[in-house]
Image (cartoon, rainbow, N blue to C red; front, side):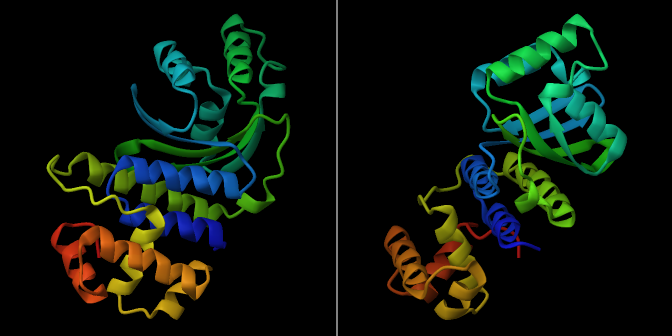
Length: 238
């Protein structure tokens, strides 16, 4: 599994709010050479979307029920695999007015090409994780980890489900995604050098993140910081 997708899975796993999940997915998309991401969950007529697209486009998409004609959704349901797509060819085999309008509006919002991974969720739902670009064609070689992408989609699905059921009174200590990941590794007994190797950053960077954690949690040392984090449910499922 490549480093980008492992970092995504680790960060999503410790996310304490949807903002952190969104940051992790956006960082992953950018690290793979894309500009935006879209996570879509479809079960019958029920649609849940979580993305970094312009809010105006999200509203148009849901209001017009574009998931019914969206070629990416159609192909995802049929193939249940990873595939590339380009808006350039969406209207070549279907000249319907609706598809032409969808294609035009998507391109107006900078959605022209991408790579999508589709996986079956619970109760016959379809989960889709898409990385999108404003370029007519994209080099998806950095994102070509089908097994890892499936794991990322499932991890996103389950984490968002947990967050939706989380009590509203959980305290927010303002820990960043990278700080949370380093703290989670520390809670597992890893040394700072171990964490540096596991997260592919320098030792002093890990030290900086954990110093920030101690300050934000008002902890005297790292052991106390881990204990406080566990008491407040900040480290996600074990």
